[in-house]
Amino acid sequence: MYNAPKIAVRVGNEVSNPTEYLCGVRQGCPASPILFYFYINDIFKGVRGVRVSGLTSRIPGLLFADDAVLLAESSAELQTALNTITEWSDTWEMDVNA
Image: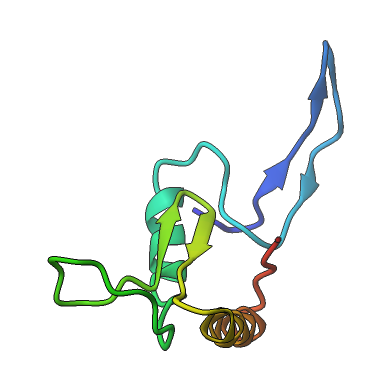
């Protein structure tokens, strides 16, 4: 399924030559969202998060597709969360954009 995947770029009617890519998941592949979810599932591990009235657990952040939001109750906790996410991204060799 992911053996030597290739991509090409189309601009108007012109299509580039195919080239291999070695990272990420295939665009448009039905399995891609599931594979990405398994990969990113522990991104908030160790992040303290915020208390929400009516809930027993704290909420460390929100994920939607490839977007993430960190939640913190102070600037110090936010910095700690950012440090945790940075360590996670370094471990898994995943770039995080601000």
